[in-house]
Length: 287
Image 1 (tube, rainbow, N blue to C red):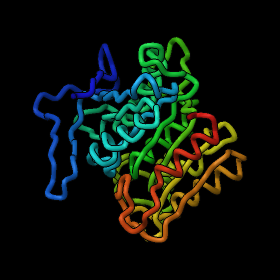
Image 2: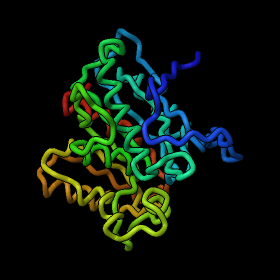
Image 3: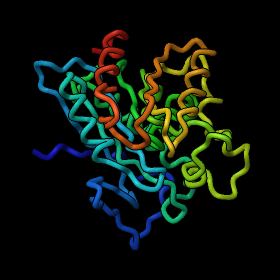
Image 4: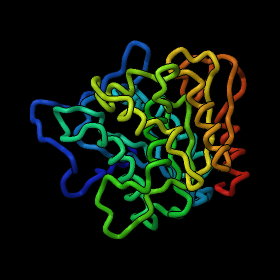
């Protein structure tokens, strides 16, 4: 049965340049991964649990893809289904990827969509049968960067918010996330796509989430593999250290092996990070 998909914006997409020659692409590669590119109409796909197990908690899922594509299957829909099995309502966010052909300010487009997703879910909380004080955000890789940006820059709205709905996620879950702009550990491709090839160190630093943590940052759960050759695990370590320094409760799981982009299943271990996440959510009162 198809899941309902709702447009993120009901009247005009902010920071958008109409371009009739660019159409969204959805392709499944030989590796079985669904890749979405050229997003022009951001949306949320809704996955609701059975009423008998629904607990009122919600999570917005940001697939990864280096800000070039969205890996919307194994880092989106598959994860949403795991959440519904434990009573959580999940929303897979199809966010805009930074593109000067489609946005007047490409750098802020993904964050606008993440903030709008938090706003929309809380606006329609009663419709979705969720508690607006139990809305988290989860992201993989560059989607983890987006989730961490939403979790550290909520006091800097990039969208209209006339009714002052909170744009702060209640919790954040970051799976092999891009975090730091430090050249020693940064994922250069993600930062180049987000802030531009000619960006200054200062511009990149503004989106280095480890430098944006405050005591108001929501508590966090992080997963990474030590041998990640795509995004250094030191990204998660730096963020975890910043959270601890600001006395933000956090939990970090580092696997010995696993590489990058494994989604729900790290093939090198029988351990399932989602089970650990479930325990963490239970310990914090979200399940």
